[in-house]
Image 1 (tube, rainbow, N blue to C red):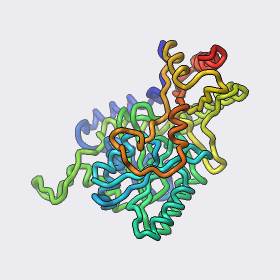
Image 2: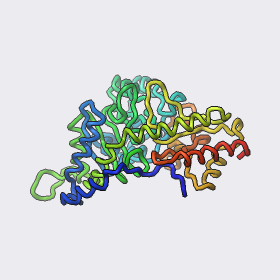
Image 3: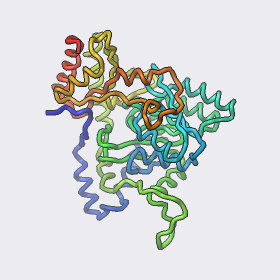
Image 4: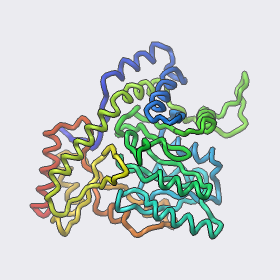
Length: 377
């Protein structure tokens, strides 16, 4: 049987809630489950946040950019290492991306690089319109520090927390930091609505504007009237019902994935050439995916040899994100950093981390990885 990287893991209440949504008659349009899901996430994050449930995290980021007035001629600074959906919305609005390298401390966007670049940009009179710290593999970027730097210069900080619901940065829950934040409930996330996302902000007007734009920007009128360009970005009531059930098990899912990471860490601790994504003392990661780095010279096999060995045993793994500045679609984009992102892509691998993975399945993953080193790949 295949061992998956991270597959949906239901908690048990989801079907009952979906049936409730069907019984209510709200199958196609927005309905009560949508409001319940938004309220559940807002309650979990705390701090007076407001939430708009949307079709994807990418849709949420796009709406945040649109509402913040980002457009042609503007720069948006973001992490070089991210999923394409975290960078494409910059292009949707005609802005120019600038990709920032990672901190060795966290393997997320380096706040020192951002602070230095903001100071230089202010002196040059060329500040970005927004900075987008990106949380990776359940590890929060230091968005508290980055948001503070942005505030000095009046630059919007929109946090891409798509991969980190359940994590915390300096005591603040991931998704509650910055002018706005983005969450994802894609099928492989720590909790899922099959597909979906959310825009979160303490600015109630921003979230209400997002809801308006996400429902085709329909003006108040007895007929269909539009004064702005809108989008079909709202999450369905039925999928929201799944989200209501998933929120009930979020903390348990985080706890289980941290257990899985801890076991990998313990079993790889004395293996030369294997290291795991660090967790700074200011962060609490969900360990959505366990990310490791393989030093071929010390371990005896490279990342690709390990990935192929796992695949041969029907074990899914995946290289770390290819940096956006190395992607053909963003060729020529400005990059700020030292190349840690490229090195992590070359040597990094995500291992199966699903909260429904058994100990026996993890034993097989661990044994296969270690055997690669002993066999020289």
